[in-house]
Image (cartoon, rainbow, N blue to C red):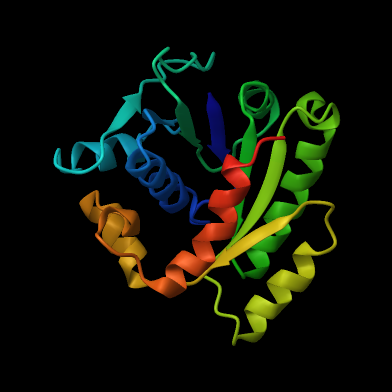
Length: 208
C-alpha cells in the first residue's frame, strides 16, 4: 500500500490542492484510493461530498482520533491531508505510518521561513533518520518568470531534500477544490500542467 502525506505547518500552502489532485490521479489509474484529513474542519471530506459519483471513486478515510487508524484493508493508495501547525507528537505519529511525504512550499518569505523549521523537525524524527520515509518538496503557485519564484528555488537548494517539481498558479485549481473536480478528471489535461505534474507522479510511484 502506498501511504502519502501532504504536510506543511503553514496554512494556505496548497496542501489540500495537492491532496485532492493526487487522490484523483491515482483513482483514475484504477487504484483503490482513500483520502483522509487530520484537520478537524475536514476540508477534504467536504470536497468528497461535492464530488460527482460519475467520476473516478475516491473513498473517505475516516480518522476519529489522534491514533491515526490504518486505512481499510482494501486500500491500495492512502492520501493524508494535514492541518496547519502539525508538529511534535502528532507529526511523528503520522510520519511513522507513511511512505512518502510531500511538502508544498509557496514563493513567499513567510512560507520559506516556516518551511525551514519544519524541515529541521522532520530531520530529527526517527522515521526520517532511519530512512523509512521519503520526503519531496513541491513548489506551489510558481511562475518561473518572477523574482520571487527564482528566490524560492534558490532557497530550497540549501536543504538535502529533492525539489521534485514546481506547479504553476492557475484559477483552475481553485475551481477544482470548490467543485470536487480536479484537472485529472477531464478527458485531457493541459500539456503544460502535465509537464509540471509528471515529475511528482513519477516520484510517488517509484519504488525504493
